[in-house]
Length: 244
Length: 361
Image (cartoon, rainbow over all chains, first blue to last red; front, side, top):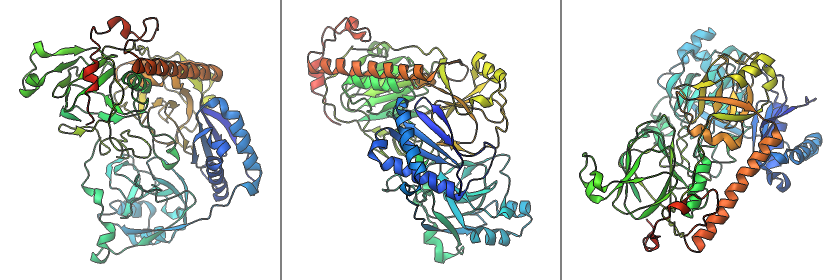
């Protein structure tokens, strides 16, 4: 598989951005994404690179390398290039399957009806197609632990809200444009909420704070909205105050 | 220990920020005027990254429950200190006779039972930074004590302070020297920038507009970003691009053509073109560029940005060495150093006995 040459530029005097796609090309390939994550992880593990590298942020078809001191961009880029050209040096990500139990519709998914109308599908059909999809985490960003999840069935594409909702509950499962996602924290947002999970997406006290990792395969599983699953949907932080 | 007697919006615990977690979606946060906190910490004998308070609005009142030393930096919020008698009569103004004024930039003792009153309500002159010997001792979360207001962790329960909060203060082994101080630079709103990944998507006229405009800071600006008003900057497909990793200082141009300067709390990825970035050495100014103020951008090249960064680091190192000597030897700073203004205003009594009695809270 051929991988395009990146466009390399300074993002700030201490950070380099590698962009692999045309600016308006709204696609990303699993293969390229996998290689980018492998490159970011490998750089962060190699002592020689880690000494220069504060952070490595993967985006869709891009990698932002944040340096402690931008004057060391040259040696860091040389290491990155050597790894990139030697396919064997970048380990394949062993993909996990993460199952997300979801209560769709009703109070948990207030925008399900809207998505059904916008897509011309019955609400039950929206749920069926969303829960049958095969998804991959392309990258994390926007909020702590928020995953950009690719693989949404094209019949479920739905333009974002014109006016964002002021308060979206943590764990909300949403559709925005061509993507689906899960809000880890209570926040405002412009995506359509079709369901909710009780899983904690981000906990800074955990050794690995983010439940979802780039490359993970995601399966949404339909949970009945009855007493048998109540325990899975209780959230300790529901009582927390809001601050704006 | 400190008690919040009267809070105002947006008083938060901040240190030098949460680094190296952007790949998890975790923003930097931290004191907007980071060098002010670092310098205040050095004056107090703290590690440079000890946590303090960032104060956006007044008036606020804080009461020391144990003996402390503090340095106020940034906007002069007309701080006064009043004794237990003044603070006992809640609701009534402190008797002026008991209120001592505390100029910013200097070490001040803050004895137990005394109330620190930041009287200015204005946000117009920007934010104030309060550093305290020992540092605000909230738990480290992902390597930092900074409050992440978006993701709701760090600082005190991930939120701004409210009336009645109690803040733990760490143990200080240093002997801060009262009346020792630093001159602070004034924010002039002239921000130096280096071109960013999408600079060349601006046509020549757009580049001239970016550099020749006095940009107005709008009221929707906050710790996430400064939203600017002025002529529109037009870029092709500004609204439909792939997101990529972004950093504080970067200048984004959304589809409406009005630039946003990303600040400490900025999210980790963004889908708008980034035309340039404010250099690290000028980022502190964002603390003082508040709605109603204006700013301009001046382009410099990368080597100049790196040189300014090096100068900034060298100055801090020099101050760290000077302060380490001062705290170790006598408490009398030498008079010939350009950055230590305290020599001219040195107290007749160093008050070292009081400092030594300072107890952990």
